[in-house]
Length: 578
Image (cartoon, rainbow, N blue to C red; front, side):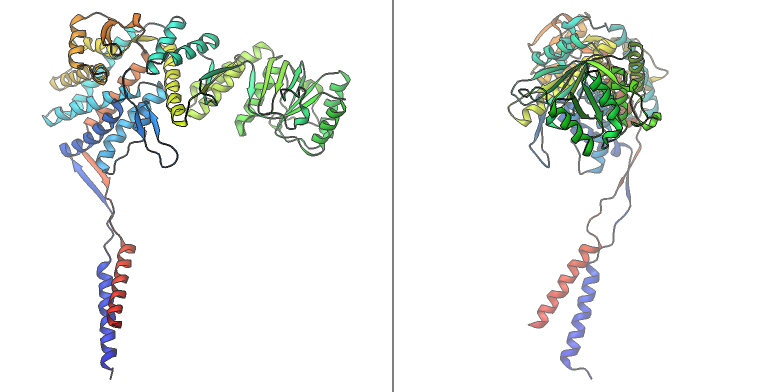
């Protein structure tokens, strides 16, 4: 027979076990579905919140948005796509609507590099009106067809309105408008385009001073300096400067001096300076070169080759073509031991510092350089990777005569980051203007292009409503610019449409009506065209949504329940101990 105490103890243990099991929640996996108007309303709420945050940045008096970062200082920006990318909602239905509008901004950024805010507010306006029409009983598929019909008409009207960019002044105006009316940025970019042309390579970096500066690099430059400071020829500037040197380009690391001995002897006999560009140079080979340099027997310098992987090989091949050398690589069946002296190239001048190398006046054959340039240009057109495109443009700039580096200055990291965003937007807008020309700015181009929609008719009533949706949406950019500047957008739009004078618009920075082109308020055609086509494409698809499926958010779970139950059991034990 069990004692009374033992029986009580076993009963308590069983009760504790039951308590533990009761605390374990069933894992909830699955999907949740919403239909019709309810689904579209939830999407619209998300789209509205995102568009409201983005639209405050539009226009000459647009405000900035502060974005909190998990690490580092908060970011302050006026770039629409940067704001859009940072927005994410805990409500999954809101998040779907926001993500689709975010996609519009990203597409506009990828294709034109600017106009992301315009694309976002256009998409929201079209989706909003489309939701109302579908709720009123319209056929969403016919609405979409009407919207596409209207967009095609607006785009053709924009192309008729477009004029090519002429002269430095117009380039400066495009850049100034895109940089939020900053004439200093406009002047910098106009100067660069004037000097390097539309295909010039321009890179934007963080500067080290309070002022924004431009550095021009003539010839081929890469960010690798001399391997040893003993190669320096000018101790005051810590640089190695050679005139008319021989250039040896090798793919692999060089450790054995025997492999390069014949090139050293040839340079010594002809009293020529020698530059060796390789993956690395160490051991016996480096020691021999340094010793020769110190004894004054041979003017030589070794430099590491630029980049990594395929980019390194391609860049070395570019340097070989530009200098008339031959790149010693196993890919072309060459190695240092078997290579002849004709693999050496030359250039007018080479300047090598601790951090970078510049080759000026390469002795390469002009037809070969032009052929290489056309190969790189076609590769830029075909690539879909943004990183690859950037590297190809850098290579193109090196071969076509120069690179401009904009060093962005500012008093703090936050200020530099904000200015850098505006410079990159202005740079993309200027390139877009060179590609497809310009139209009047301030939202007036879309406003006047939408006039053609008054006579456009669809196949049925629902398509006509789709056309009307686009017509009303085309007024939104102009209205938003005005309201952000403290003016009543609807009144301004009505006055402009009543006047019906092409190029006539509203200068929101001064609050007066003017000839937009003469005032220098112009937009790149490509930016406006991309904004309307991308926004309509995505928004018209959103209108056709009839069901929305999302993952059910899991709450609790087995591990948490088990822990709670265990605690309860321990409490029971404690009670027993008493």
